[in-house]
Image (cartoon, rainbow, N blue to C red; front, side, top):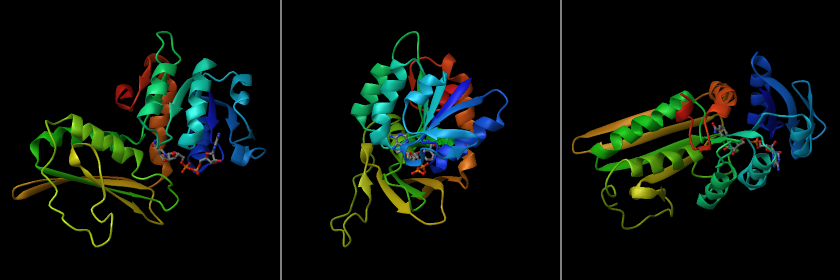
Length: 255
Ligand code: NAD
């Protein structure tokens, strides 16, 4: 597979470039990032715009950028016949409807947009889904590094949606009548799940899902200590994307 990396000068983009170069079945042929145009990453000059991906004949483009940019990039990739492996977070329902129509054709290209490429996070979401019907209350605490600009994290949003879809009705009514500090009880997601976002220097990406019933709780915790944790999932998706038709919203179909 001939791979391009968008956002190549960013924290994740640089790690992806190194992972692609290290894999014998993948070839890094293009890199783009207006924030790092002219720089060299893993021996490839970073271009300022998307045309470099078409010029290099990419089969797949990996995108770790910002939602505002990816809204334009993804339909452009589909139009130019390139598969997309997307880790960018912060999309809304309208964005997913657009991406669904861009990548919904029978003959591809295909896309995977996964809020979290770490296998431990994929399993954490599955386990949370399994637990959801059996408890009365549920809250999520997600913890990330102090340069993350969206909240809650894409992983927390996806987890909340999957928990809500796995049960009938909302969790127990929240008892809070007054918040001394506004926002102390976090944001309310589907099924009434409260989500709390911590931004902490020194951390990478972490999440706890806490379920409660009378006299018992269950805590499911996942930690990514290093950006390397996302790379096996990204590499796997690059290799398999041609065989997973349409738009996948998680890494599950690839495992
Ligand atoms: P970062 O700020 O270090 O990098 C983002 C890069 O995108 C920057 O270099 C910026 O110049 C570039 N960019 C901005 N606009 C662009 C455009 N129009 N075209 C190309 N590049 C553009 O951020 P990061 O920590 O690398 O995170 C990037 C994204 O990945 C975020 O949305 C983050 O939430 C997400 N993320 C996802 C996972 C996952 O497993 N899915 C894991 C970690 C981070």
